Image (cartoon, rainbow, N blue to C red; front, side, top):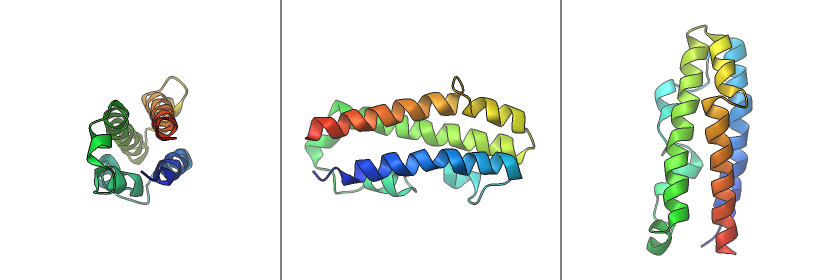
Length: 121
């Protein structure tokens, strides 16, 4: 299995922090919150749910963990967007802080993606 999609996914999800901070600063996001919430619309999500990953990998613990955390990541990101668009910048920033839901899930997702990649080499 080509693991460059995992590398790209890690990088793309890291960029979400900047996008969300911008949404907090401006009070609006460049995509609808409903799109942010679903985990199969980003490039990594399309790959994760698509047909490129072999069936045996989709049965592996790493895949299940990444898929679950990826869904939680998008839920947490959507929550930040909802707060930002509602003018609740302080609450949105709290979600982004080190103990906030977005920050915690984002970190767990990155670690899980890295562990999955390492298991493939």
